[in-house]
Length: 404
Length: 140
Image (cartoon, rainbow over all chains, first blue to last red; front, side):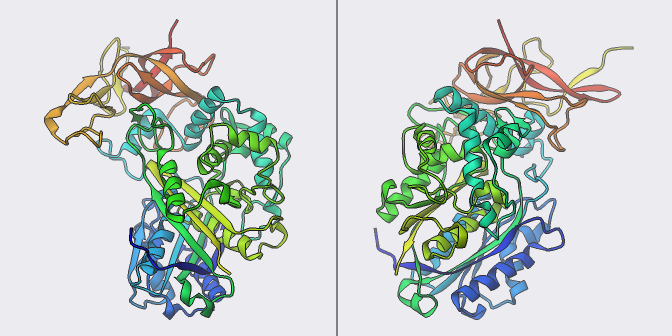
């Protein structure tokens, strides 16, 4: 395989996560871009290539400008004629556009690039985007089975509790842990830490998942600026090397029925969440790293089930290793041996679908640089991993590290 | 007053009218891969994309509950269940090897691995019709 040139993240920006009914998505993107450019000490005109996140709920908000978000955002910043792609990978879009922007620079075609996404999912979106009863499987699934996202997660969770020994306490402890740093993250939405009792007393949404064990949906925007590592010192003393940025897709025979589908045809030896396992395997292969090299993780904790399922996936561990690590206190987001979701995770932010991957990358960069303020993790950091997981079998993951 | 007509919310997904409704799926004659709803081509990456290889089948009316949950709050439109009360949803394994979604007829005493059989049930009605979908019912 031909070697590409090395690429570093030199600037990051994040619009806070929350509810912003009065702002358009391009407007939120501009705020994130302005912060990222200031962080990189770069001018807008120096950006040579852009990858933007394609919003999903376009039949409800912003229509064409949601799909064609890249050119809408560029017009809001002021058009400079650069190549722009708008990519749709559902909740994995943030990670996917990181890859597109990375490839633009790694290939040698462009010296700088930006990955930017804005998303307004607050108000509990996630519903079919057409009423096409012939070809829109998502619509068919939804009206005929009434399966919501939490119901899907609850079914996976229930199966895990049947197969391993995951307990209601484990699921509640996930929220206790992820909410611990939330009061110290100025960019996140919910800044409250919760006790186990509060989590277990919160209403049941879809058994066995309680309200506080399921993330909300939010508005948010992020921007990540990259350039070739050899030019990074012009922009920052603390370049963060992109060691791997990958997208995974499902393997035929996956035991999961992915969201928006009605069935799967499980094949022996294939397992669940293959889009995620495939992305993780590719990330380790591309970077040459192993799970034990990872110092800090941002994973997609849409629910407490995700946290344990994804921790096992990211560490390529036996099913149930995550629960053991949780119970041993190893994944505390501030002083754990392996801090997980130091940002407060999706539990504290709520999901701003296509921008969520950039929220995670922003956190990893701040933590690696030692700029996370009161939620700075205690241990020395070198290597971080972020993963997101989306509708219909979309997935993205990245591995980044200190390059100073 | 005659009983209302029972109408599938979307036609063509299961056999109706029927005492033992079955999902209408497709199966590859070469490798056995089953898909629901029916698809034009076999979804096996190692199997040729030849339309004639795929046949329409009626899926077994009985299955095993692989997992389940209770949906406690009413999902927003376009899903409609009136009057609303919490309902069960499950993933069911059929003998053809398919794992498929469906509403469950009850929220009580559900257990992983229990045998279920397919029926149809009403989600809502209007002056003329009852609107139905397929549902899985615990047996025995």
